[in-house]
Amino acid sequence: MTLSECVGQLGTKQFYVKSRYAVCSGRQFGQIWYSNGRVVGKSHFNVVVIGTIPKNSRDMTATYHYTDFTATGTNAAPAMGITTSASIPKSWPSTAGILKGGTLPSTKKWAELVSGLTIKHTITALSGQPGTLGSTRMISAIYQPNIKLIAPPGWGAEPFTGGDIFMFPPRWDEAGYLPSHTAGGAAVFSILPTLTYSTAASAPEREVALHIKKAFTTPHLTMPPLATKRLAGQHTDEPLTRLYHDSERRNKNRSRALWNCVKHFRPNYPQNGKECDEFPFAATYQGAAASEHDPLQDARNFSVLPIDAESNGAGGILLGQFYDLNRLIDGPDDGFLVKIT
Image (cartoon, rainbow, N blue to C red; front, side, top):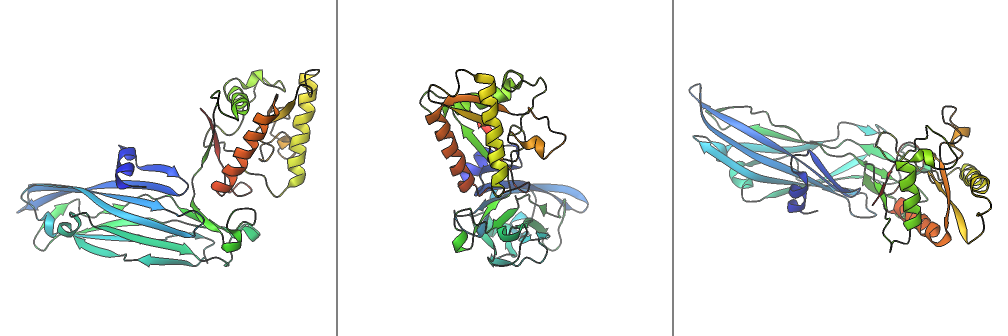
């Protein structure tokens, strides 16, 4: 991610997410300069932190950019000290060993940073150490950038304490069903990725996309009938979660979906080259058999529709690629959303 891309996307937002491998955030720091108890000048600058993780890597790099330096009136801004640091205040598990690389903490003068100097900091959770979720060896950490301002001797300014900058927490895993597991696993940022399906006429997954669109917009018109149907995957408070380890539960999801396709679309199914498409996907914990594991879930809170076999296959391939690309792990500690364009 480039600085211009980050700044262009941030606008008035606190952060921008490009993917699970590239995020950024920023903050403005303003100073009011005093002399003999009265205001004589003002200054401010921005700090943009771009976090990146190379694909199939365990290294997270934070690149600090200092921009938009402005000073008016009488001030000592060029001599002000700007200290950049970053801490890891918490990790899961707490015993996780995380290596730090780079030049932080670093104190530079305003006059040094105004030229476009950047500072890089890298953190890495070594593979092979204990984590959570058994053999997944998941490690998560809070990465906290901080800016501290130091007034030159003889000057006062307010506010002059600096502050923290938000950054998404990195997460490492060694899940055996994800890429690079034999090379020690890899890292991503802990965000909800979005799987995108297209309804365009040329899109191979078009019929899957149309089915999910109907399930999202008019769920009460889908089969099996349920007036109060509400399907996960649309909103951040109800994400879909990957189901990998429990193959029996995946099979139950598919069996229940198939049974409902036969029941509600006979005699036109399974004839005419159609396959039974289900949403939420069978490879999620929210699939058709979810009610067997959640007593609060209605047994009809899913949608099935016979669709073209090729489109169904294309949708499944995209889902599998999405799981791998975004390192989706099994269970409630991860999740994703679905978007229809």
